[in-house]
Length: 204
Image 1 (cartoon, one colour):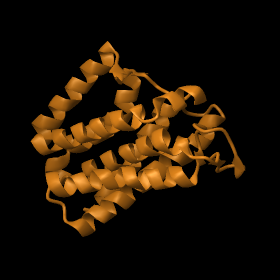
Image 2 (cartoon, helix red, strand yellow; image 1 turned 30 degrees about the vertical axis):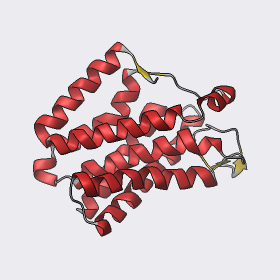
Image 3 (cartoon, rainbow, N blue to C red; image 1 turned 90 degrees about the horizontal axis):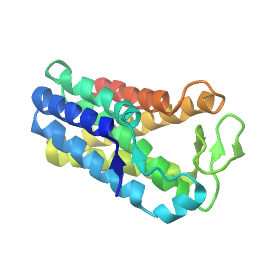
Image 4 (cartoon, rainbow, N blue to C red; image 1 turned 45 degrees about the vertical axis):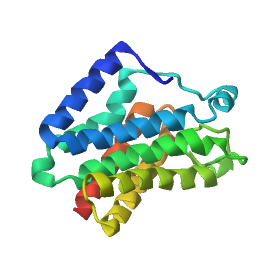
């Protein structure tokens, strides 16, 4: 079972309350869908990930904050900007989650975008064929859920999926300097969710 430490649990509860108060039950439900998908993606083939040294069992408050702060702020602003920035930001976060948790299980090693050389799975700033497909699948899963939960029409949901994928691409690009010691996973996740939110504003 995926675990959150005490501060991460408290932060998650606070964010959940803010989502419900400012956005409503739909916002909270979509975030819970993301959490369920996140746990499933993390637990999938966990033994293989342990062998690769990339399995994360416990998540701290930094992880919760980096993934949740931008969607929460967009939910607070939703009376003004509407729901699509929030939805697309969540799609970006889930896109990154699927890419990092499922994309690493491919047969071929990912390519580091700066040098275009193959590197070990889990390297920041790298992409693989499977990782790209999983990234689209992760964004698409949230877009599909938004059709049911928010009543988003299918054509808009397609843009949400593409916006979520774009957010994950920003996360990956931010991983290039991260590998050089500039920034960290927190900043990369933050930029990815922010990029997804901005794409949501553009398609609103």
